[in-house]
Image (cartoon, rainbow, N blue to C red; front, side, top):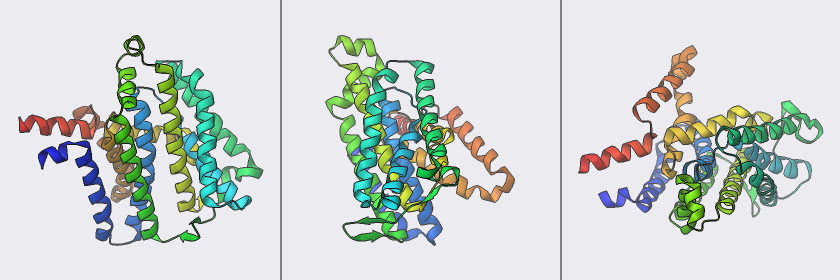
Length: 314
């Protein structure tokens, strides 16, 4: 049992078990709403963790790709009458193409220069979504048609929960397999030492572009799901603060940990909802929790707990 829980496949089995059993303990629809938003945020963080945690490339503008996917689904389905699945794929194609175009010049930078470049990209996308009033509705936002798949309309908390939960499990499984593949080892080599990786024959530029595009595509997928689930979309979902929130989730849960990204997304999405009992001090309490976590668990929640558990076993 210990070997099972300590392996990646054991972690995936635990995730499946949690996703399957958790909704039966929800007392009302509010918990379903929180769980669905946790799942959507976790999908984004899994892709972002591949970029930040495994490849070591910072991105402060990932909410831009989340917004592109969301608005592509909203505009193409609501305004132009496209099938939602086709609109979702179009959003993925747009996000992936944009990420591919900007990846080489942006990822040639390092450190705070890379952070500033990705921040600028996210700000540009946010400004475009806010200013194109005729297309996006501007700051007031726009409605989004319901999601229909193969003639079946996705509605109700249970249906949305299983859709988002299934997508989360699929993305987690793909990320775990990618990390264990030669591509994942090449990404970790780039993170460790780009020069050493290049000397060993790793095409560092190609792998950095690949993981940047992949993380953008995953964010776009989550954005499309969020647009149809919420039913109303505003440019706030693509702004700077949303990008910082995604990065904080990855760091809090533990970089280079797929399950850490999920835990970080769950904490920062669900915790504010349950800290409202502190009324005007809920943000103070949330900040205190984050500060204490980073002080006593600097590697992130999941990696730190895993190291302590292995130490106790020894």
